[in-house]
Image 1: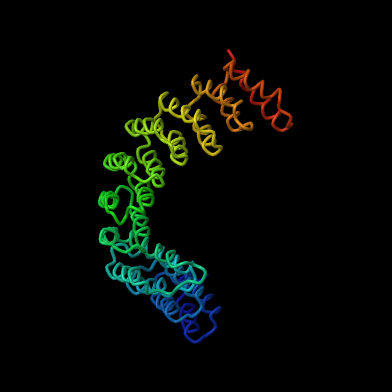
Image 2 (image 1 turned 45 degrees about the vertical axis):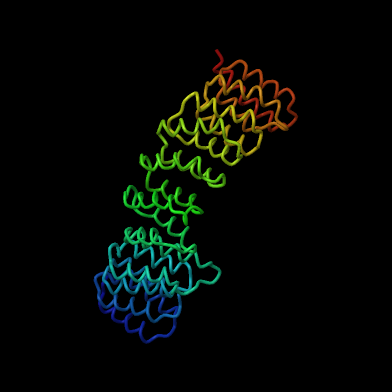
Length: 379
């Protein structure tokens, strides 16, 4: 293409203003994105198309072309904000906001306009998309271009409508930003945000890995959190405190007292996620397996044992004992016993017994392969 060919750009600019055919306008916008770098005429034409096209795809293409020719002027920023406000297609709004996240960091005008747009709801509704989708997009962009504004909005918010969106948006701030982390900790203690604990914890998982203050707060939060929200706190602890021995100890102690199925599942997954472990974690997990035969829990528990239970005699003995008591053969548990019990005579005997009563050809082949691997390492 004729990169920065002023004659070609002028011709296209004139055509963009004289033609009412939106498909033609979109083609012009696309072409200017490849030949218009450094040309003010190309920039002005693309901005003109954003403000004057009724065809959303022509405006979307114009926004993409402004990004491609790397224009970061205030006029371009204003045009992209307007595109975000008036977009009729979800992807057009996404495109405009994603470009703003790259070129409007710290731009006061864009921050103020997007904030007003978010709070007032003064933007074009998008067919087949609920309002909160657009609210979320706008809030996420504010978080990325000025995290202090999203903190202020979250801390001052009293509207039920915005609670989840603002809590989630703080997770879009740059990793490790202490102001945002402290704001999320503060939200955990505000009554109006109690319903959004899971969302707050998820945001902390994204930006506060290893943060000791967050770990302390979540440990303190566990006993007073509603049962429905506690699995999220458990997940958050195992993510944020992935290599923390205090977190591991907390989850081990919790395992012996937990009654709720979802919490049991969360603990089983947490033990498998953490990079620190101990035989006590295996003991805690197997103790839960002895009192809970739920299929989903067993899936998570056995997946975790494949990571932390290799060669552990208690884990091997538990599976050997419990497998025959299940209502039907749990093939993931069978696979787990084979993987953690390689070379273990008792495990080989138990799986050989299952093989002797198995009628399904596929399962017999599966078991035979497992046993061959186990026997190769038998002492």
